[in-house]
Amino acid sequence: MYTTGFQATNFALAVNIINEMRNWRVSEELLKKEEQRYLENKNEGCTIFLGYTSNLVSSGVRESIRYLVQHKKVSCIVTTAGGIEEDIIKCLDHTYLGSFELDGSELRKKGLNRIGNLLIPNNNYCKFEDWIIPILDALLEEQKKENKIWTPSSIIHRLGKEINNEESICYWAYKNEIPIFCPALTDGSLGDMIYFHSFRNPGLIIDIAVDIRLINTISVRAKCTGMIILGGGIVKHHIANANLMRNGADYAVYINTGQEFDGSDSGARPDEAVSWGKIKPDAKMVKLYTDASIVFPLIVAVTFAKN
Image 1 (cartoon, rainbow, N blue to C red):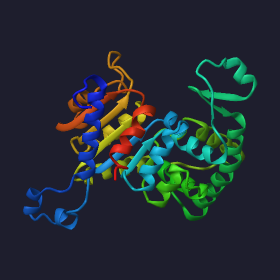
Image 2 (image 1 turned 45 degrees about the horizontal axis):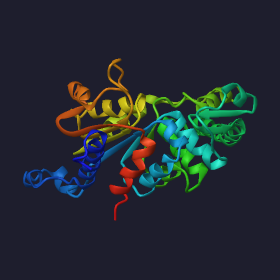
Image 3 (image 1 turned 90 degrees about the vertical axis):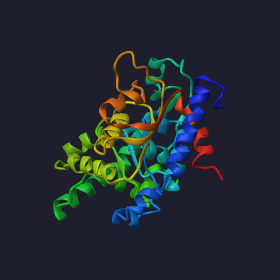
Image 4 (image 1 turned 180 degrees about the vertical axis):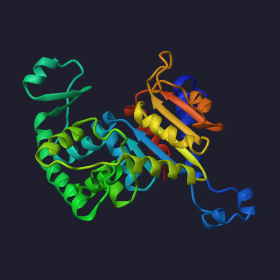
């Protein structure tokens, strides 16, 4: 596939780069320096940051992501609020396949919300509200009684525990102690629930400063880092900015359809991140211009799931 050209070549490059991430180990050169921190963790691999947007969890790509988390193939995750709530909601009820051409006003009358060609009934969000409000009550109670400091990642950890469903990404992240960071936790139905809860039982405080210290520290302490980013926006920049704290990632694979002509971070190629110090100048990097719902399951199959 490498010699095919166009995005087929970039697909092959992405596979090769991800396999290099997976197989990276501390070099003999570093071991010969007898630095204690290397000798203690000489078998430690590359710290892999996985980022994805919510629409991929709405789609069947959720199963590929869940596989990675279930089998401890990634080190930490950054996603959006939708990436959390859609994962939970799918444990409560179904998402349906529709069409991109369905009429929005007719769907509104029927209580159906469209995500591309996927449909989510309003009732799914009602079930989500019934499920999460008692959990928010419990978080507030622990905050008051135990002076517990809640962060987006610790709330997501708790949601993974409470959903207790092996189909869930959040469940396996909880089970395997893989942090999920969500810097825009309030941007979605999850934020709606926090808003509603603030009227009926006010006082819950969520500290984002703790999480930014945590994700940046993971990056700084890593001997090698790789970024796999599906989509753009906040998940892309949050991971890249964490890697700035260590003078850049060693590997980077972007999968999105964004274009750079408008100056957006979402559309930027990896080389732009090099100029900011978010990716190292000698890093292995590629941007695959395609729909992640097509290629990411294939990439997982020939990298993380191979053999």
